[in-house]
Length: 175
Figure 1: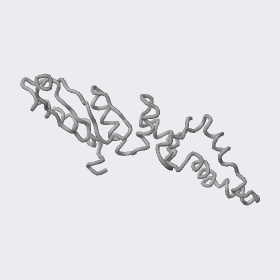
Figure 2: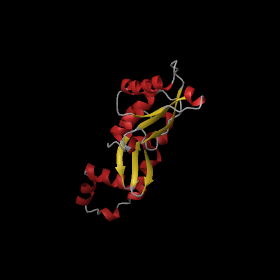
Figure 3: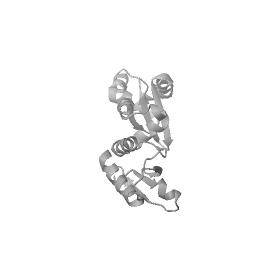
């Protein structure tokens, strides 16, 4: 990811803010938790004397569809940011859909890919598995296969398709 795409958090010192000053920093989250804390603590050290630990994360950049709360743990935000950087928009879509139940492990287990549509996913599964070729060998041409009906069956309870844009559908298994 380029610097413009790197997930970042905007951190502010609340004690100085309450006193009419703003001490803040924008921290790139493509580093270790300790690396984030070093930047974080450096900002707090400059912000106030004596040093206080009243802070908030009121804004963020490049977390795609994900949102953070002002007081989410740094480690949690850093893990989200690293996973977004590693897995991209698909992970953000998954988290947006599943909310607090989403984890990187569950995403890895359920993510099936990005497709033009849910029907395109079904067609590609038939093609990759060789079933389409088998049917054609039997004289059943592709035009006679009702992929929309098959798609409806598959997505009743075993798959989820999340449409996020034109020909941009993310598919996940439910099992």
